[in-house]
Length: 245
Image (cartoon, rainbow, N blue to C red; front, side):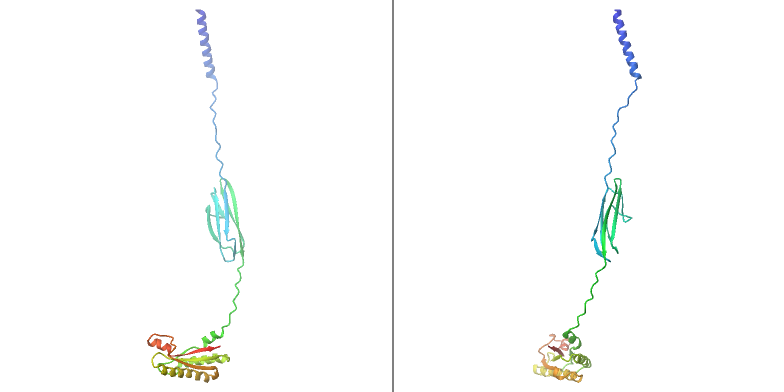
């Protein structure tokens, strides 16, 4: 009986001792696992010019694109992360783009070559031909109704025509007399001849040799206007001049 009691007492004593020892032991905090912060993405930058070669006075377009940048400058001027702009350099220029961000700094360049404008050769004027000179200087003359008398305007035109013809002595000219539609065919043929003759006489009086001038009457057979009104008839009452080659 005493042995059993001593055994129980020993076990209790040992348990109490273990409890005291465990209470006095230093507590170790639990181990904490830390995750390193993510690395920033690298900065990228591109810059291009289109076209890359221009003449002075022309323009080119600069285009750029960046990623992961929060500070972008083009030749020292702050710009958007991506964009384009026109440039007109007066000499060959290298443009520089600088992009900065948490991931670093990236540069890009674009070269634009500028050349002097190509001189446009001054075209050599082509001297007017005979037909053009003739058309400018020898113009149709017009008559009043049922008349072969030269008006003052017609006389001035014939004097001008004589000056041109005298400057080109090799030219030969046909004078064509014309009438409006009123009157018979025979009557208008005669009137047309009288009108052509009146022009020839004034030209010869102004120094043009008569053998250089031919006359013909078309009467009312070659109208330039076919409406039946005074404005149209006036256009048909005329002498027309043709340069003979």
